Image (cartoon, rainbow, N blue to C red; front, side, top):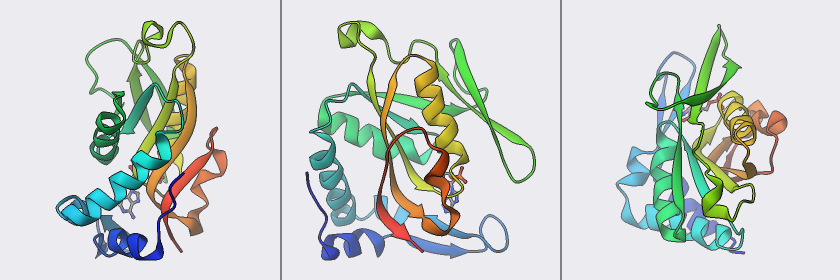
Length: 185
Ligand code: AMP
């Protein structure tokens, strides 16, 4: 399994732009648009993820709305796998299964198509799915997304993030192993 060198980590980390006080005061927003537009950083990241996950015997990659779609679909294509979207409520057109999670004030909801991880592609076995997003903060979104994957009869083999905000301890409730490329403390 591939391990990133410190130099490769720095190539990725330095390509991500910090935007203070966005979308509200006190938040440092990790802007990955500058990673996406930097071919060396994007290639370093995606080659690392491809090397890591080619050993996992996966059936699908599932990406979280919306930045998880970008990394997830590149990785799915590199690994020759299908890609599934986990979306915010009300965006998916076919029959969905939903999972609620709490925010600072109130609730939000993620959904997936009921047949997203169809068994006919996996010889009748439960599909092995990698969940991916750009960043884990409180972990609410990813915890809901992982339980959604399990709810529709698939197995969330791992949850993967480009960045993890370590001080928020977001991974503790996720019902799957967690891998983060970069740790921010
Ligand atoms: P959470 O549910 O708190 O783990 O939030 C994760 C979701 O919110 C991910 O889809 C992230 O893209 C986004 N997010 C949360 N905090 C940040 C941040 N500081 N910078 C960029 N995106 C963030």
